[in-house]
Structure formats: C-alpha cells, structure tokens
Image (cartoon, rainbow, N blue to C red; front, side, top):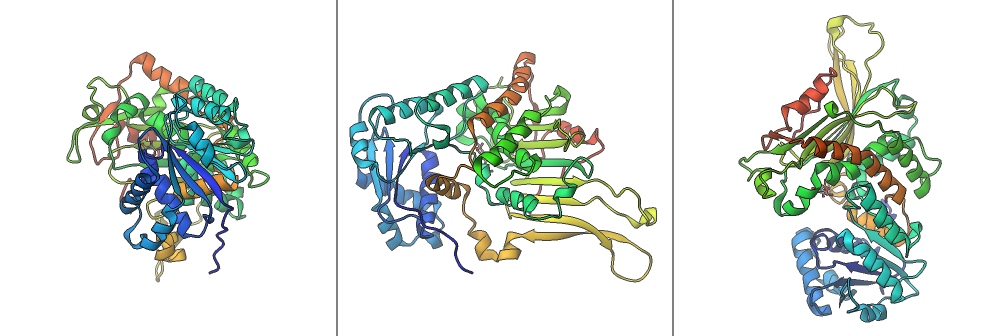
Length: 486
Ligand code: BG6
C-alpha cells in the first residue's frame, strides 16, 4: 500500500507546560510517532516552556524518559530517538511575569509555522496570549492550541474566548477535544457521507434511538481536587459526548472543511431540548476491590459531584424529533468501552410467522477498544425446515479489514490533532461559539442539581452504574447495551 503521509514544512512548536503530565503521556510520544512516520521535517524545533529549571540537556532527558514510558518498546529506535531529541529545546518561562520571554523570542523563528500549545490551566491562557504579543513572538499566522477544560460554565468560557480573541483571530485558535481525533469518530463521517446506504435512513422515521456510551474502568486517581469541582458532566458530557452526538446527528455539511462542519455541529447543539430532571441519573462509585470509593478519592465525604451520568436527550429539529439520544459515561465501570449505537426501527409489517424471530437492525460504531463498526442484519437461519430468522453481524473491525499490524498502528488522537495544527486544519477542533453553545445547554442542568442540593446515587465498582440508569431506558421500553470487554 502506498503511504499517503505528507511531511509538513519545518515548524516551531512551543509547549507551555512542556514538563507536565499531558506532555509526558501524550504530546511528546505523539510527536515522536509522527517523526517516525516522516512527518516532522528536518529543521523543526520543539521547545518546552515551563517554570521548572531545566536545560536543553535535562529537558531532552525528560523527553527520552517519557518515550521509555509511553512509546511501545518495539518502536523505540535508539538512533531515531537520538536524532529526534536534537530538535528539542527548553526555556524557563514565567507565564505571570517577564522571566524567560526574551530567550523564547530568540528561539522562535518568525519565518516558519509557529504553534503555541497551552498545556496549562485555563487561568494562564490570557496571560500567555498577551505576553506572546507584547514580546513580539506571535504573529498573524501563529497558531495557538488550548486544552480542555475550556471554562466551567458559559460565563468562564466567554471570558476565555474574549481573552484569546484579544490577541488571536478565531482562525488561529485550536481548541482540543481529543475525542475528535479518534480514528472511528472520523470514520463516522465517512460512513455517513461517503455511502449512499445510511443517509436516507438516518432520521426519526427509521431510527428508534441512539445510545452513546463512554465507560471507563479507571477511577479518579490522583485527580481528586480537579474532578470534585468538575464531575462527569463537565469532564465528559459537555465536550466529548456532545461532540459524538453532534457528528451523529448533524446535517451533511457542504464540504469537509472546518467552518462547514462546525456550522452543522453548532446547529445540533442549539437544537438540543432542555433535559428534565427525571431524564438524568447521576452516580458515585462505592469502595470496592479496585480501590477506594469516589468520596474517599476526592477526600470529601459530602461531595455531591457525579462520576457517572446517564441521560436522555431530545433534539428539536425535523430530522430527529421523537428519536431520543441516550448518553452515558462513568468511571470504575465493568469495562472500558466507548461506542455509538444506532438502533433502527422494527420493520413495519412481518410477512413471517410471529415465532420466526426478527430484531431491529443495529449499527454499532466502536471507538475503543477494538475500533470498528458492526451492523446487525436479519437473515434466514441456514438449513431445511421452517423459516427461522437470525441476526448476524456484518462486522468491520479495523483489525480484520486492514490487518492486526495496521489496526495496532492507528495514530493516537493527539498525534493527528497536533499535525492538523501544523497543517492549519481546524476541522477537528471546536470553534468558540460551539463551546459556548454547549455550556449554555449544560449550565441549567448543573445549576438545577446545585439548587436542589442533589446527591448522586452510589453504585458498585465494576458495574454498569446505578440501577436507576437502567430504569431510564426500561421506562421507555428500551435497554442499554451491555458494557463488556470485547
Ligand atoms: C479526559 C477526561 O478528557 O478524557 C478524563 O478528563 C477521561 O477524565 C478521558 O478519563 C477519557 O479519554 P479516553 O481517550 O481514554 O476515552
């Protein structure tokens, strides 16, 4: 197969927070994988900028340690790593003061693509943006990358947008939602808009309901302080699940280009119905074999923050009125499994006997693990005798379609997104108005819980969440898909 990987021109990438956890786990290993793929041109510079006292040499050691930990052993080619490390530099920079900015200005070249990755808390976004300009480092072509959380409500998101807009045009701002970088998420767009098969059926007339699940086995771990202020609604629903919902529900954009796609997603968010309290279940995991309870992990026995949420969402437009979208996410659940499941309606009339058996068609788009798609169709059970119907999967796991090696080599979301920044492609990034619309829909829900001082329901670790979450679907005569290891 001919590789279609296109090397990009040399660039300067400054990672503020370059010695932080995200850099270590995702950004730096992701860059190395792209280097190995031949996408990082000779002469590029990757500059770590943080408060810590590192030299180029000790930062390169930090980077190489990160590779040891987070790059697969069979990909760690010593010679390649040594070559790649030469591209790395470090500057000690004070985001809130003047230290280090002159040194940074000397390293960042005005005549190559410049990207500034703010891998720091949102309270520093405005400071960094302003200093990059006052020190004449950034220019009208520079790109700035910001991480979530992008605010904690509409007001804070607006402030962040305003702070960034003072110094950068919207076309320069890349708001990361790493779910958009996942391979299958983009495949969802290919499935919908590169095939004639699904689009005619993709509406309330033929779709009974959609389920979107992002279940994790991990707990809160060391992130208790952040998470207790955030909760699953802010941490997962307002961004990741919302983006999956948008890509599933949006109208076909006229082109696969940034604003066409983001305009359509925005329309979906603006069409979301407010959610009734009866249509949401929140949970917190109990103490279990896997570890302490949620309350112990956040070190707050009165915490009313949720680490599980399940909800029924309606979309008020012609395409989707009457087709509910059920969203669910939680920590310390039975298995790690993220998927979008589209359940089609029953056939209008069966010509077969009642006992022949037939189920609705179900399309499953698996994000992780074991990326792929699966469409269940009803056929005749082979053999003589009566007409007996069975459901069989038309399975398209990546591993089957492209081979184990290629499936195992699917780029991590961050790799793809960082290279999109360098290429200047904003399609898989959230626009400011999109983020604000998402908060506008989320805010009243969170405010309602706070006003009622509502406490989440306890659930067992290793389960599918609180029993009430099951009831959320049962009362509509539907069932959640099993959360299970694949
Ligand atoms: C992050 C959340 O954005 O996404 C985490 O802050 C969560 O709480 C993570 O664990 C899940 O990402 P993934 O790619 O492992 O599904």
